[in-house]
Structure formats: C-alpha cells, structure tokens
Length: 93
Image (cartoon, rainbow, N blue to C red):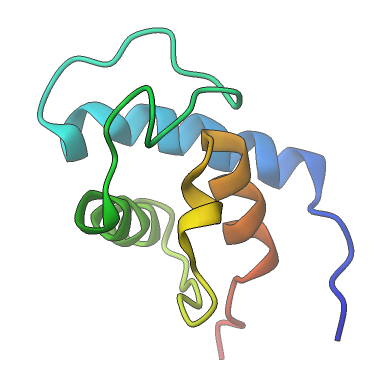
C-alpha cells in the first residue's frame, strides 16, 4: 500500500515539534534547527536518542507512530523524520 505525501500542515507541525524536542532529548541547547538540519551528522543523534525522540514526539502530540519500518535513513534530517512519522501514524482506534 503506498501512502500519499504527507499533509503539509501536519509535516510542518512535526518538523516544529521535532526541533522543539531536540534540546530535551539531546540534553543540550540546539538552536536554528529546521527541516534541513542533519540529525546524525550535525547533531549526533544515534539509534537510542532517535528512538527517544520518536517516543517524546508521540507523547507530546498524543500520536501513535509505527516504528516497524523506522530505519537509519529516516534520521538523516528533521524533515526525513517528519516525513516518516507523517506516513506511519497508527489509527487511534
């Protein structure tokens, strides 16, 4: 099943939320983060902090995100993570 591109408003909200959560998850100040910010190479996000970021995102936004297909490539940038999350939200049923 192929998913349609993410709703731009949802993606923007996710990018904003990921950027807002970065200081909490990385336990240091992060300034000027945007959709193009490289999570791994620029900020040092690893598999542990990446998963923590996704869990914090779920909690903050009250969403459930499928992490079954979540891979390293989804943590390239804030935007790629937002795209993954938007495409992998689980129905709230």
